[in-house]
Length: 225
Image (cartoon, rainbow, N blue to C red; front, side, top):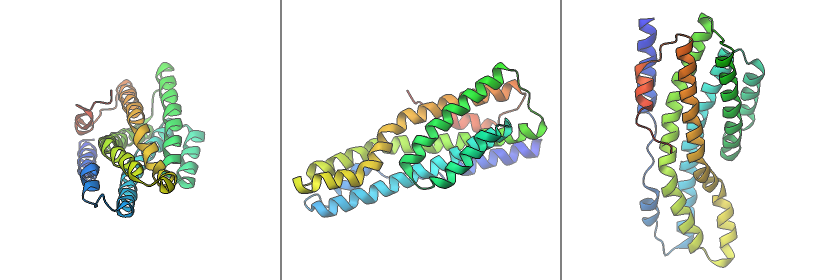
């Protein structure tokens, strides 16, 4: 058990350390040469691509955790749905966010019911659940990074749209709408993930599953109000 804790703690530390840090989008946009609308628009699209890639990466981590949690609770139907939607919507940031919200809500309900019913996990299920919790904590740290990047990207995108000519404004808005949608929705989504993480920890404790210190430490100090 001691070796397992060491391995899980190392996994948390390594994954958190690898979380990408996105540059100041507003500052990046200012270096593009604002007098050239075309250059500014291209720069905004490149920034959007980077921002959405950061979100998709964090979303994959959360989805992997949700899948493990569903399997640990023997929620075969939910696990199958998560797996199918993950394949169908791979790389589709807006659809991934919408699906993640629904999955998160369903998982919350399932964990709450399991706690209410006094469900006790067997040894194999405990192992899966612990893996899910560790993965979930890493995904939440990654999502917090996306939240921190969102205001700068959103400001840059709005400035780009404002500076576009009347004939280009609608087109530019359309090209940046996915990134703007994620940037606007990500704070509330992150808060829901935070709520789920607390619920998952409570259920772990009710099943005598010891949560690695690195996992709880990674989550401490975060604010999603």
